[in-house]
Amino acid sequence: MLLKFTASNYKSFKDEFVFSLIPAPKQKGLDYSVMEEVIGKTSYRGLCSAVIYGPNASGKTNIIEAMDTFKTIVLRGHLRNAENHHRYNAASEMLELIPNNALKTPEPVHFSIQFLTQGMLVDYSFSADLGMFLEAEYARKILSETLLINKELIFSRNTDLVFGNLERIQDLLVDAFEDNKTGAFALAKSGLNATELFLMNGFRTMFSAKLTALISEWLKQKLMVLVHADAIELVRKFTDPKKKSIYVEKTLNEAAINFGINSNALGYVIMDESHDAKLFSIFDGEKKTGIPAELFESYGTLRFINMFPLVVNALLNGGVLIVDEFDASIHPMALMNIINLFHNDDINIHHAQLVFNTHNPIFLNSNLYRRDEIKFVERNEETHFSTLYALSDFKTAGKSGV
Image (cartoon, rainbow, N blue to C red; front, top):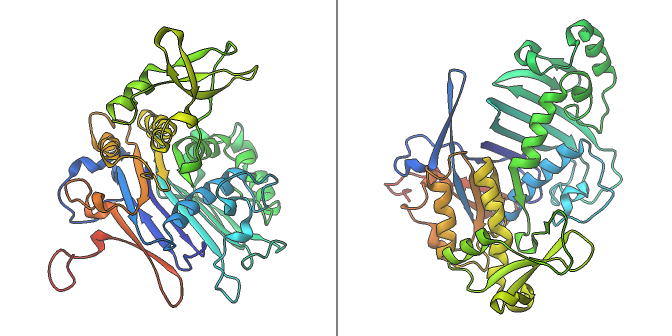
């Protein structure tokens, strides 16, 4: 469960923004949106959804990009650019695109995240000097890096590397750590690489591959961030496929019908020796003939078919589904039904979360979203810097009430 994500000096966000899924104090109503997990003697509460509003070019997508960029850098484990550029979020692979382009002198880029996984509260953050905007050859370096588990310091990296009480993660430490900890501490401090994250390198090899794996697997499997989601195409693979065979997915077709999306049967066709399958509209009953879906189905149908399996994945595995323009070309009632899946305590038993940005005012409904689930992004006309805030930041009465 994601509780909080922050970033600063990321594109239009010069100052730190805090994207919080922690319920705001004194908010009442829609208790189904509030999930709770207990770790030890402490109870943590999180929101199951959030919607982000703002004008075009205000910075809504930059929030989602920042989450994706943070995830990609951590999983890569270093500040070097990716060798292959094929993602829809270019800043995650070309780090010179991250710093705010209005700055006159370099300022650090900072990311932090707080989430719950495997009965642990994880707080991880790092800041880095990436130089100026478009300064591709800059000698980048990590300035700070901190990991806390259940609010207890595990390590902190600034000018020096400091360790907390590692007995807190005793069961996750590498074998024979106690016998070699003095040497491990000395080697870790002397072997720091300015461009590499300690969590994914030295800490993983010398201290706790298990803890690093728990964190990286949560980022990889549970934090599903989709930038430019309209370009997402679901690729299906089948074991032992038969060439030119049609595979009709009953669940997907029933879901499309129930959500009011599609009236034609849909299936996957194996066209060649590859295990990849192509989505087809299926006709003629038993003959099962068809044509490629993109030639016949609406854009909204294709969007739903590509997105719905991700919704199911999030619900089944307690994932965090964060989508740019989730509602593009999908009927509002279908979207309401999807949102209600996350708001249903009987269905969302694994504490999945849904976050998306939109221009559609239909979601500004006190019967659908709590005030702390409604976020707004504005961009200053003079500085062009973006600001993020929640509706719950404002009172409900008085001159400044909303």
